[in-house]
Image (tube, rainbow, N blue to C red):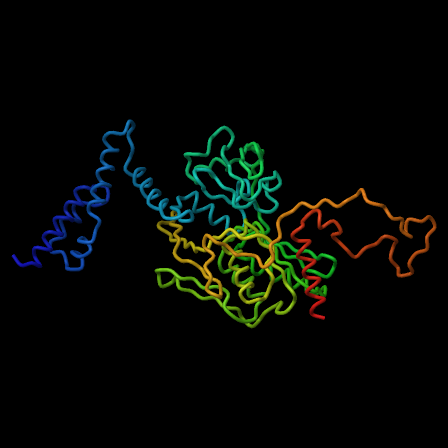
Length: 437
């Protein structure tokens, strides 16, 4: 017998062993047809982790024969798939029909639940961010909160999918969240009423009638187009500066992040990705058709700003197009690709890391603001001397300008109390406008 035949025979015997050990995976007719393995097939079998596969089949058979209750093959193999992916990273997942459907609803802008982005940390559910105008945000849930119980069910020991399932439910029903929050001595109990979440991802308004405020709560498929419309409408008011608010924005669709960055850039790289697959190597650059190429700009971020939010902030920071203000971002610098397996099942797999134009990876580090501003609560003094004004005098003359007494062009006179970070952003814009004159 030649060495080549010996190798093929040995590989064939290995294949027979695997076929015998995994009856649920390999059919005997297919094994019977393999008469003369090719050199390529022999090499593939040779490189198989045979010891680990034998251990897997041993565990599989032990559970089948010795577990206290019968477990069918499909359930065991589904659990094995989930376990295989669970050990990779926090963002890869095996999507069963319900999870696959939820993901599709989420990126389109409508889904059911409480309105929070969550992840697992040390066996508990960590709130990445509450989404704007959702039950969770209105109830007072904050980014960074650690959920330890859902009603009377302890979270520890549950998978993330199981915990999310408990948070879902019929709209109008209530779930009690037990939360550990940094700075609080005792756990908090927050009641949240479930609802169908319809997220308007982009909102805008003017501040002091001269500064555009654009709020993006998450990156959906059409978020780029929505931001374009809002900015275009703002430009009709002869604005002097722009605040782009990405605080508590958990990210979303990569292309939306590219589209939004392109609105404010007229050239240069926005982001690039690198991975093992050829299609994971991508570069995205700004086009010359820019809507706002030169207005002073501030981008607000915080610890709830993740993924696509960090792409936008990183691009505008590296291109020196905007001043980044707030707190360090979350630090999710990986790209997930949805790989369909069947019509209703898919694999969400981390396939690449993304990098800012200067080659920075923000994975587990985040974007550092140019100006650090804490999320402070400001209380204005009301116990100081109260000065009498002309408009307070009985029978005072009008100003002759057609304005009523006491009118103000300041649309947000209490902004410092309500949102100190935004207040500081507007102050910076005003300074930048003065410097440009």
